[in-house]
Image (cartoon, rainbow, N blue to C red; front, top):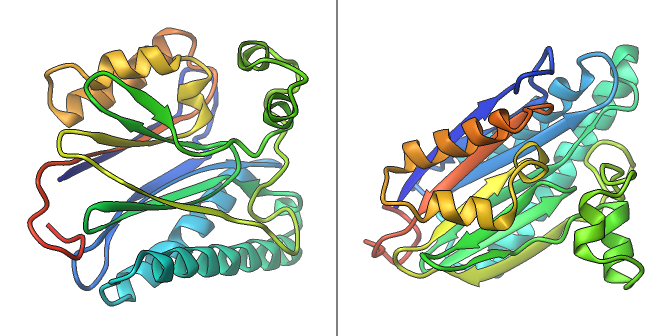
Length: 252
């Protein structure tokens, strides 16, 4: 397994409000996180950084997980604690009032990928020939898609595309989605912000990730292509590639 994380502020924005990284706990289990902050003058970068740092702190102190259900509960719990951190910070710092962030986190447990997320940052499962979005966007237009009022194609150009129905830090109580699914040898797990998916289609992403190049080269091409097509937003990607697992507990 190999993991690469990179973020780019794009070609238009003055600051990068995305944050994330790849972190390891005391037993070398991996946690990848991507967050897309929003709200107020530079408050978005505060929100995404605080959320990621809280998860990183808890993860690096955690012992090995053995059960996916236990790990889902753990992720949901610490993300909700991160929500409390953001709310308290905004209350104590008026310039951060109204800040929030998306957050998606993925970790590997044996032959399974365990995911928790809130907002419209996405996780894709990619093989040599297929790409599948495993997460549902918590957005206004995705609700319309799920209700059958518009198509996925219409959602791409909808004027309220960026309106979120859920985010971290914006409400006292948050609902976090979790899921677990199996990986296959030779496949990839891609976490990304909408700075990538607003510019590249699923097919575009598949074309780049399936090329015979290093993971670093693949991530660079994703970022460069999003910038080439305008780069109006910050762009953040975490790419995990899978080979045969060397242990049964998700460590490599």
